[in-house]
Length: 304
Image (cartoon, rainbow, N blue to C red; front, side, top):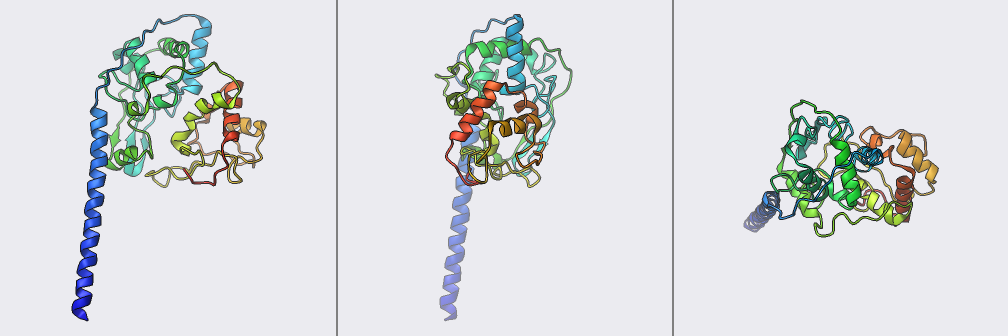
């Protein structure tokens, strides 16, 4: 009997060891695939950009930079583009948006290189940018790309060193499992970028605007804990018309949420939610986004 139990114990131990080894190999292959993808040099030509000084174009660029492509906000590159605040993401790593003003990386990039970065997520050296959500707004048409770059070039230089960026293996693994987007260029259809429609208060346009929400709220937009994030990071809520989400909401409720950061029940949003940007969406963008969210299938909270 003891001999039989011993053999069972040895067998179970060996099975556990095999599972651990297999898991380790799978983890290693995924992180190695991430490293290989980030080392890839993309053959994507530089867009041709003719900078504009037209007041209307600059106003459009300012709106895009602060709202729909919110690079000029405190939680991203900073309102002066001098670099954002450092965010500690526990087992994922440490992230800091760099100084992209004329006193930082903005000086190193030509207009064409900056346009390629914004649309294709490709850096000056031809490799993928890390974490910057270019894949969410690659659809913006040429006129908007010109407007953003024209506006950004009007901002003064900021002499400020870049903060730390530390990427841990778990973050690489989760990227390859499509749980969090870090390797950006591989997520973009480079042959079809820049083909977005004219703004309209429709769910079709809202589908594009709503891409900005998926990074935190998940592909289904039903919210739930961000994979790998430390417990101090707030849990994104459900944006679908489920009872645990936006069921029964009116546009006025949604508008108050975006502008004032106050839910329908009167509870304030956590500051982690970028109200600084979403509150600046114009009426067409907000109505389009609301129409899109209301068109989603009601999904229980947490089914990211």
